[in-house]
Amino acid sequence: MSLAAASRAPRRISVGAFLAHPVLLPIIAVAAALLLGLLLIVALGTPVAEAIEAFIRGAFGNSYSVAVSLNRAVVLALVGLGFIIANRANLTNVGGEGQIAVGGIAATALALNSVVAGLPLGLAFIVPIIGAVMAGAAWGGIAGVLKARVGTNEVISTLLLSFIAVWLVYWSVQSVNLLRRPMTSTATLPESLRIPAETRLPYVSDNPAFPLTIGIIIVSVLAVIVAVVLARSVYGFRLRAVGLNAVAAARAGIRDGRIAISALAVAGGFGGLAGAMMLLGEQHVLKNGFSSGYGFDGLVVGLLARGSVVGVIAGALLFGFLRSAGITMEMLAGIPSALVDIVQGVIVLSIAGAAFLLDRRGTSR
Image 1 (cartoon, helix red, strand yellow):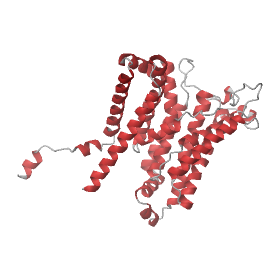
Image 2 (image 1 turned 45 degrees about the vertical axis):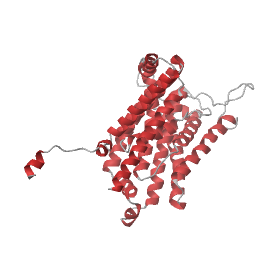
Image 3 (image 1 turned 30 degrees about the vertical axis):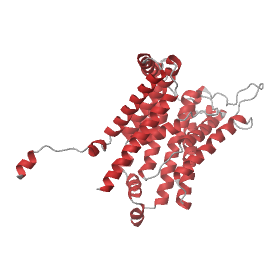
Image 4 (image 1 turned 135 degrees about the horizontal axis):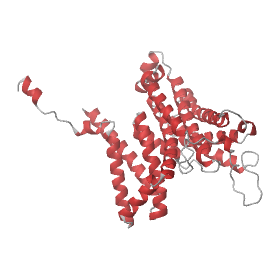
């Protein structure tokens, strides 16, 4: 075949190259998971039309549902952004749940302080936010120090630290010497006092039917900053260098220990901020189990994004609306909300399995 004929010949695109596309693989995984969800709904005996109607009502039924879904997406996006920062250095932060927990404790403690509540110029909610970020960063930094100094696997350390943080929340709301509200009777719930209105996140609108907080603005700004840092900054280059080859990076003068500590601390700071968004934005009361698995859902968002900031935002929106829809489906159609967890699990397994097969195929060539 001549060179001209070869240039005119149609190019064959392999299935592997098609699936390796950073956008197509998550889309296929989500579509497969949603299809499985529909099949499970049929197996439960619930009319599909009724389930879909409940799904739409829960996610997009009115302005209130949309605002609540977006507020949930904000929390998931923050955890996901922290995950991809650490993952750029080949570190896996699975401690989002614990970082949310310590962030929530710090934000509540500061918000309930009368001095902080009386601060002017928005400092009444800014100070608790800063405290939450610092608490989360310290919690993530512990795993970074363990990784840098003694080589502890960050998956294990961040996961175990999450269990400790969850019990710290339990201790905080059970002890009257810490954050538990004064007990008036044996029936008093183990939770904190309601945080003052001055320390709560402002809403973007005066419409009470659209309770969207300024968390959406905060996460949008942070997403742009993270994208720029990862793509254009020296720190982003160092993260990538350590992630690709820690030995070569060390020879170039980049200390992988410092990168591990800073990356996990930054990821923890994002988790702590997510905890502040939950307490200052919607819940307003610290109680046991307040994080409701958002840390693990944020981990799923980070995995789904495959290192992309845009992917984090898209995944956070998907799971934020899925959470809202799942609750409504359970109330209106009698479908267990655990179905949403199954869909999320299938998405993770689909992406992980496809990525493993693609890597194995690439290695065998």
